[in-house]
Image: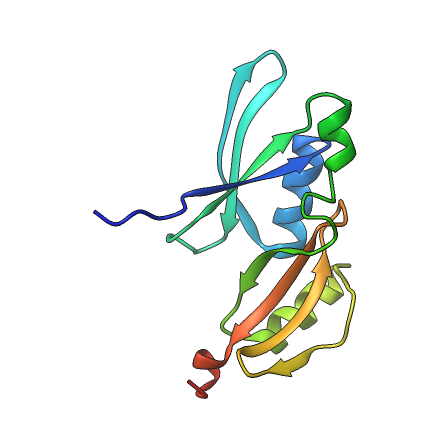
Length: 136
């Protein structure tokens, strides 16, 4: 059996505000929300209709060190890549829902892409790969 990345952890301030943002703005579905006791939960999300994964694990920051990293887990670099089959549709829909894009869409050899930030400031790429656009 081949290995694969099953889950990626994202530091958040609050489970419920993060769930609401990803569900309402990006059409994610909450795939699990289990109480672990002591205020901790195992909360996973993924884009609605995606059964391939990986899941996004919402990890509530524990302590000052982790809290300081919320929104900046990668030192300001793009952290996550949200692939779409229809860039124009999703870019327009996300913009209408208040998702903040840091740049205009651009066409690169690997696809159409634009950087946006989540509710904490983490940078994401919204990308439609060139292969889906008939270029690869």
